[in-house]
Length: 301
Image 1 (cartoon, rainbow, N blue to C red):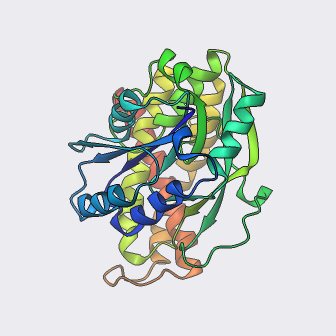
Image 2: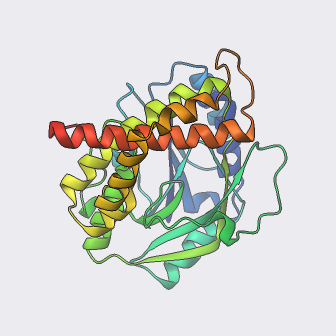
Image 3: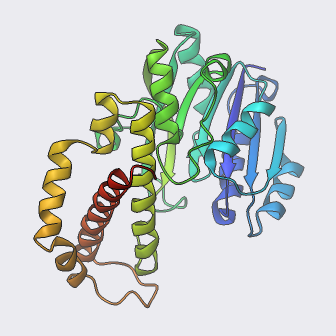
């Protein structure tokens, strides 16, 4: 088996069927790749979608059902069942193109020991897709980003897989990338290994979730820095003197209250206006840095 596509899913019933169909419709031979799908304790109709997908699968499909325990644990459950020489990690909200696996394998043929990063094009839905041409508009500087990345399975296992102490949102893939980087694994980029990444516009009902995620990401940022006290970590997380000072000053000046005042009622499930969205993103940034400071003072997440 040349490659494993690994997907972890949690309550994405409205996307999962399309994602799996795209994974089935690859240009490489069905005998050359497999799909390992980890259902991380979904509480929606995900099992029914998986059952339907199993009936129409055109390549080997392994399903791992487990209680909800976070993405790091789910990824490791999938790693344990993977048999491909290269593991290709995607999320349950990305739609790969038909040449996706072929392009990852082509890059690995030229660079056998490397990480291969693919391109992601952000879209608001899967029904109106733009021309699949990646550009710098969609650039991500992440060394190892599980939206679209592959690596020799042996290399990933050699660095210990995913750190299951990352139980909350954020940074578990960056942690793996840093360990691979420090182990001397190089990364290359293939702009033709493309996925469409589902990024719908936030709605009023999403605001509190966005703020909770920002705080959780701050807690895992401190955790990441404790594991990797390196300038790359401090730059990626914003956990540095300049960024913390600027946001502390903004909080002292009442920035959060000002941003809150720019957001209307959150009672209805309505689209946010452009002004509201900008305010919510700034509010989330202040929540992130406020939690970062709190955790640093407490000394533990």
